[in-house]
Image 1 (tube, rainbow, N blue to C red):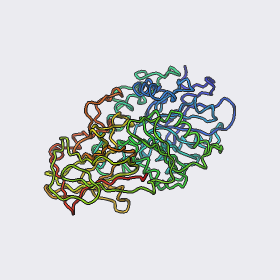
Image 2: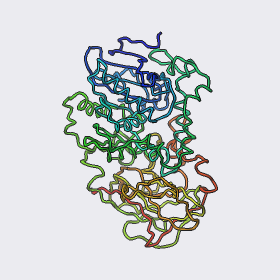
Image 3: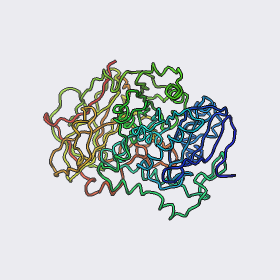
Image 4: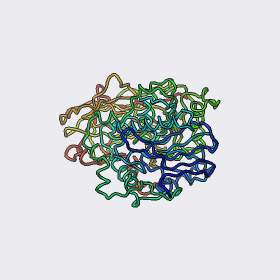
Length: 580
């Protein structure tokens, strides 16, 4: 079979490995699925590194099996032959009059070139793909971007360029600040990108050719027609892990790979996961808050990272949005409230959450309430308590502070933040905070998260030497750190540290307690199941761990940290309480 070919099958016109030529002469290869009838249709475009020809189940069997079991409607109404990781299923979209365009990003799948994720070169490639799609004879000139994670992240970035033809974007779980959201939480390096690169990108890099996998649909190589040796492959990609280890402060490298929110003018729908702490949730809320467009909507859901996108809930929401902006249909989106939230209660799954519409974010009726940490390990509203200091070993279990049992149900929905006063016996300290929920008999309640089945309510991180705040961008409920310089600690001296916590939502039942854990390493849950297959070395934060020794030198970070309590230095966590 030829590398490029086209036919009509499964109710669609199918074209495989179409060349979209870039300005430097390198082709980006695309698969096109469009209606059989001649006409002009809007385009749903994705551009990413996961190999468009790799079937979802073949690449991610553990995620596929989870979706089949827990989200059966995600697989209904389609043969699932064309299901690929984190992109729309053409069998669900083409019958509704859309063209689905899947592009392998530079250096991956069937597209040759040098791999450098979210780089200015990738952004230019994406702009040129949008231009190509808008000008095709089967296109109505309107392009929408839709997809999970990577496909959402590059949509944030390219939307700030406002390329002609891009008419709307759906950001389904997509971070927008490559330093703060996913690479360096509070300045602390996450090892996620290095592991992701090895497992999900190098395994489908262009040039694997006959050494790689085959497409279920075409029988062709999913990683190109050329077969290279390991040395050639290495020359054609950046060294992502080392790049992030060596770039400790926020700099142009990260800015080039992050969204410029204020420049975004296209309509957007930002969909976040309440338990997406390690990568995406911050970006979904930040992007919504600061995007320059007036036509922006926010949605927040639960469940795992991929399945809700494919469910009836997710698909109907996406089509309601794109039908309005790409097709001019009367979908009712003109009456859509600005904020759509799934409100969580303990023990519930994605399908059981309460759907609630709101007019703004953060919610205007939020009552930000301080719960003070006390020397007797309590979280207490009201006046701060003076007393002794508490010291913990950074590599130990840390300290946990609990509220009294709540006397009535209480909803927490929004941004939390913590203020601590601490000293270290070395020149730095890493803070790992976890907001937790406990039953009346003090058993912890955890939640199905984006990539972990036992998540806390909210996580926060800070490298204390990078505690400097941007005073113009910070609020009491959302401290914003500049991360542009290090301010080493003097051992034994007390410092004030503001810690940003990730947005969250929970209705705390009567009799339950909230807890705040302060640690020097990742939050962990003991004796828990590990359902998601090959990445089983998780610690309660999914695979967003912070264990890179080159970034966390033991002589500095395997230290002792002391929390200080008095009326002047009164540590607290600020909670977004929603009145009944």
